[in-house]
Image (cartoon, rainbow, N blue to C red; front, top):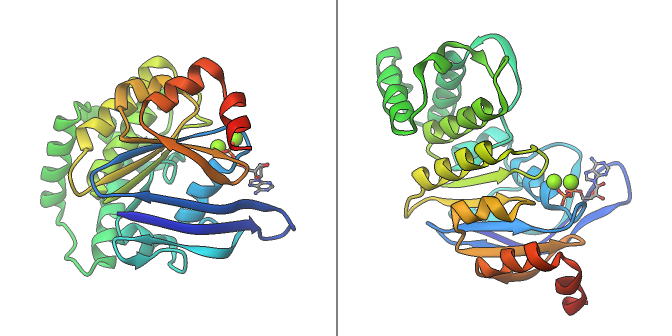
Length: 251
Ligand code: ADP
Ligand code: MG
Ligand code: MG
């Protein structure tokens, strides 16, 4: 379970406050969505949780399964069970997808004090996960994300998520220009990986994505805070009426 309390974040180099008291609890096994107007701080929230440079936490906390995240190095956060879908979208020419995933999985195992997987163990695991997610094994042989279509990158992201077995998955789909097929892939991937001990935070502009994922809770973020929370119907309300009415209500 992820608990964010009173999180305040500013830009490190500028006097600009971006998050102004975010309160958010995502219980184990639940899927929560965050929607909200452009510039409201959704991506900043995911960056700060991942430990990206350039932001300063000025108040508040974020705790994952009892572990305080904000002082940890990014690798420690991954070992604690956090996965961010935009963490590895980079193209890495010359590095095979398999090698990359094996390195990531073993780094995480090491950080957790677990034994590294042998080549054979890893191969068995990745084949099994790829088959479950209906991922073509050809993709595993190619260089990481090089020349991948948007859909293939999404598939790869879901595979990374499956391999790292996180307890908390954060997907920021806001700026990725998802077409309908890619949206479907993300939704199917999330649904396939749902488990009672795993939660998801899906950041999106698109109500349509939520048609396929069916979140337990939808949150609306505006001006650095969560201003409304509700069921999936909240996403439909946004789709039909925009944010204007909702935000006027909360002032
Ligand atoms: P969202 O994802 O909801 O569209 P963002 O988190 O990307 O919002 O941005 C929130 C606000 O913070 C915006 O006004 C954005 O311009 C600003 N911001 C975020 N990161 C930076 C940065 N590194 N430098 C300057 N401004 C930033
Ligand atoms: Mg934006
Ligand atoms: Mg964003």
